[in-house]
Image (cartoon, rainbow, N blue to C red; front, side):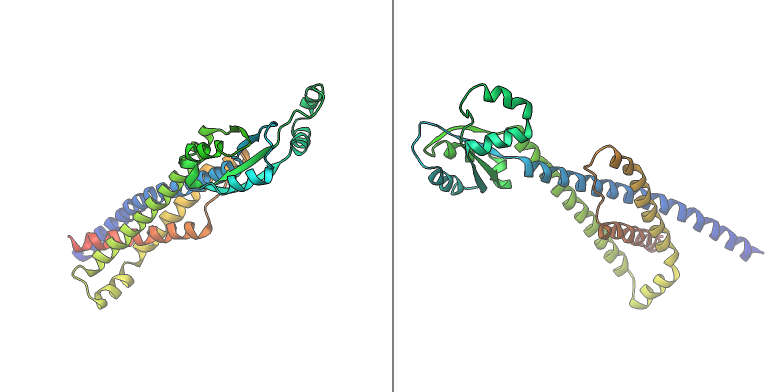
Length: 263
């Protein structure tokens, strides 16, 4: 009778423990999912803005230097990724395609008023200090004006930095979990004891897997409506989702092992 009562109390405590660990792992996995999703979106936005960002270098009409010479000098500047020459005829043609309503006003000015220009694409390092690229660009013979959006350059750089930061934070969290697992397994444990704990406590691992899977599903349900509000919607890759679910199972199992060794 006493053994049966003790067994019932033990099962009740296990059920309570499962619920507590499930909620702990679910909360951690949900935060990891949020970071992964935000990183994917930030990186996608940064790459789109970076693809769109250009420095426009305008050539003066009075200068006699050939565009090819200025092109080579601009390409030689540190931080330059690519420079493309766009003649005044091509610039007018591009304007007709992008803004046909403006062509009437431009045509009323008679001859083509558009200048010869270069479109420069800069690397990430140059975006961090774009003034260091613009200053020597002004010294290139024939350059009459340089146009760019400094705030857009800073926004690209910050978005890339935050995406890298989130990746490093998640990697450090995963390494911390692995270290915690190693410390738990080596504390007063043998190979035989480890194998026995794997067999005996596997249900805790599966509870953590369930919590991680639930966190992934809930996160997906929360962010999916954004797909219909904006074309900039990117879900993290399946490998990272599998890693979060597996980490959830490992976390639950390690926490239970740590609890047993410190009772």
